[in-house]
Image (tube, rainbow, N blue to C red; front, side, top):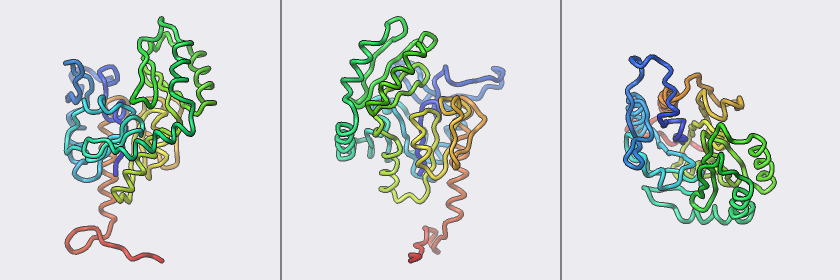
Length: 285
């Protein structure tokens, strides 16, 4: 099973492409998201082909902090994923529909373990300044974020807010122009483990670029991160993590190559029956 973050991991806005080569050498790009009648996110055409193949070779699970509505704008190449993880683990989609039991269990846990969302929103209202905040947003009634002018964002405010939120069971993360406040129990890793259980996955692979992806990468059997993003900026690592040198859209393409190569290695190592299906191994006990 492959559980991958999307934004700035597999797909990229025009501002995040990091096309450092001469224009004539730039890769051909495929638009995979349109918002308000304008193309918003891209991957290389080679990456699109890799993802099409991966979708037939493994259970591919898009794993994102995006809301369900934001996720549904994306048109990924290849077979439609049976499972997707949205709202940082708050929703598991099965054939495009929310698993209500999972979502309700998440909501109960957040109510038990964290300060309410209303308290976070009140802090935003009381402490932020319109000179550097463009938008206040609530996502799926689970977490909140600000869209900010990054160059004007006061570092002391971000640190003070992070410390305040930590004491109330929330995590703060700066990603591009967005400051996220997310309850600590709301994790991609918990949702990934649930999907892996349902799939009977014997190997889990993951990739991501931000601090909100760290728990996902730790929970996977093997993981990758690109050469950009919060995790790169903080030199975050783990024993089973491969750190890529590529940045921008080229990193997304390389991550997909690594996924496919690892899936192929895994398939080659699994004993098969005469009909080609995986063999049932005897219980070692």
